[in-house]
Image 1 (cartoon, rainbow, N blue to C red):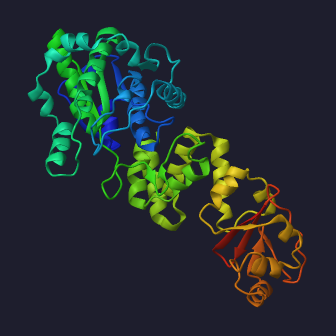
Image 2: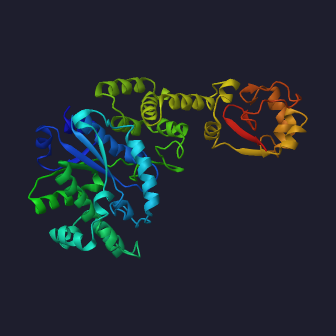
Image 3: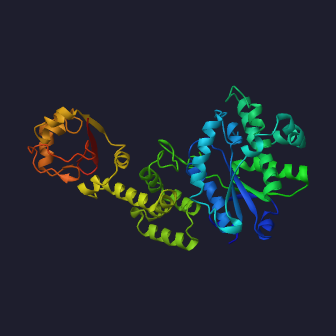
Length: 434
């Protein structure tokens, strides 16, 4: 597999230094990408970058993931409008462990010569004195060279226009030197010849190639992928609730699956090439199927299935599909009972939530009483309205049709405390008995 051509047809290639193709064609090349451990989990924006390493390994090269234990203490100004909060060492170490576990789902660490590897730049920076760094690294690059980087110029320009009052700190300004030294260290001790990343990392990556040239007279290369963005130009990877994380504790598999399922046709057509390993022929076939019946969302379903299984598991994917179908009128009481509490709450997170005291619930006379007076008029404003809709077959509780408004309240509470009420085709309510 030719890495450059693979990234190009997938729409993932932004730029690369002259000589990169020749380096890759010369034999197995070690290449790396850095990940800052600023959270316990990576998110789907990071996943696009991980896929660069996946394709590097599939092309027969050696991928190295650098977890920035040192650089994570500082913060990269690239693409940022404000300086990051600095994290303590214990927090960073916990974050690093979470990220390592996630990377192991995508990269093969037991494939022989081109097995993936994880390194931590704290290992070589922890004994580096400030004066030693200035003597060995700082003297090789001029301030003019560093100021010319887009990441620096944009931040200074924002300051001059009054967008930020505090300015660009020396800490952030020095970031490119530190990242540049990472490349030099890996070049010297790990035989790394290529650094990759998103397009906003071009300046920092080429600082590394320049350091290698000036310190050792060596030659190294840079390749950056396209920054995946949303329709409004902002970075991809966030939903209305914030980042879409790879950790199921932060973003449930159901929400994760739903995020991909709800993409527009245009986004799904682009992102299925970036986030899956499906071939060009397979993707084209899915797209043709989608065009013939867009309402069935074959494109989104294929993307959501592939990514959910690889990030979580096939079991988590099947549970997410089953949970999703509940909102579309499928499934029965057994389906609802089979949902774990966190999945159940995820499914009905966006619907009106109603709390009812256990004593009030136990003393409720009829179903129409429950859906009107006991729930404070949130489902039906009056008992008469509740009775009319029940008689017309428009009300279900826990996926079972309510036939008589004067029936006694005798439902199996889901997880011993929940009732799912459906009014009409699309109106849901989640009652919690406390």
